[in-house]
Length: 189
Image (cartoon, rainbow, N blue to C red):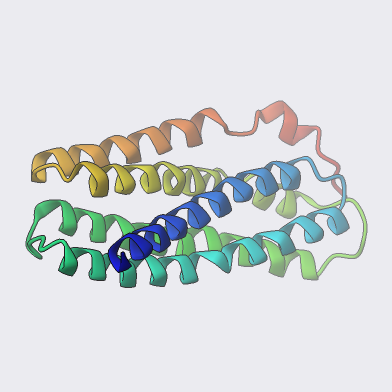
């Protein structure tokens, strides 16, 4: 019974992280459509609240995962387990350093502006293709890690799943980029 409860907690942590990732995409789309600094600030504040979900979900995922591996008598040197841990580490680093770092840069730039239409620097940060790419990579990488944890393929299959997830995230990140006409039409000082 305890194993099933921990499995539920484990899956709930995955669902919470994935839901936060989806909400992050929604907030990013609202930031891209914002008309002034105040609107961007409001939505950017939401990204900080959403980002707070990830460390807790990560810790719960790791702790419950360790328990599940021990109780299922899985081998600690199983390739799928190593690839899953590597995928989780990539998720956390990409989220904290790339996405978080770029959002902090946007927040710093916004702090210097009053409630008015924003300048070209803010427009560039709002439509930063690296942030969008990193967010899509994290979304698809999450699915790749879940696939590896569920299917438990040999090393080649696990690496192929993660590689496919990364490629799909990059493809979506590039496909969802802002059009040059949309950026040019933004209000600037």
